[in-house]
Length: 333
Image (tube, rainbow, N blue to C red; front, side):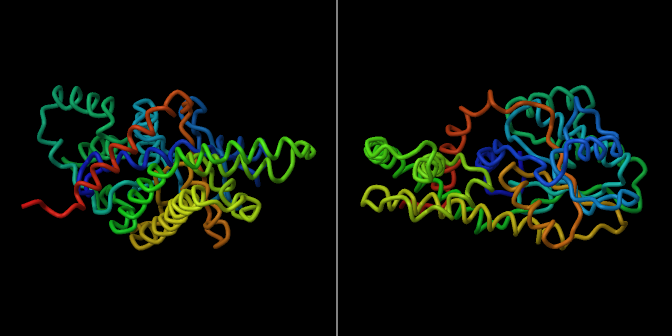
């Protein structure tokens, strides 16, 4: 649903960035398992995949929940995580990708209980209601009769203009991509004929460039791509496609910083942590930024494989780009 954007279907765009994998590169597995136990999060619900939390006597500043948009099981896992955070970690403010205002879900409170249960299940299944929204409806229903001093709130993280630019950048990538991928084929063949040792820097960069054009790079892979960018030949077909893809990723990184800025503006009245629900590309990027600034965090990834959901993302992205393009087009007379 992602209320706050011009159209609910625009929120489909963020699905792409939810499929990226992340890992706790700076923590040994046993350390992450210790964090998992301290938080009392069942592995059937979510895995701690990274953390910077030197002093476990206090909760971390942030919980980053990795989202895989439009996958119903992931959304129910996210809702359960948020409700756990509300009950056990004192979380009162949730922030979500794909919306840019405070999210008002009070209309669901007016729906009869039996009807509401069926309606919510259907909306989640159809990809129109996120896990954060589902949790907010459940928690707000609990608070309705006896409002607490610090009520639960759900906020969007997006900057509208930046979000629109990112969607339109995706549209440019799609327009150039097929021809650019074909242009990589003879370059790969040439690389094979000169019998360079395997693997080699050129081959690895060609792989990263293909992943760039397909919008499949993780945050760390994109940084590696930028370091080896000079290895890719310049051609009239490749250049505009690569430029469009690089613009897309740069805007995605810009959005990650905006997410942190917007979450920091709405400081909880208590010392409770803030919980942010964002896609995997943003999650890894934001974790690196938080660590650099000395802010503590824990990343929680729902215990559901996203591999079966990779194929629908391209279709969802195209639908979203079309919706955005229509919204931004001048009216016809």
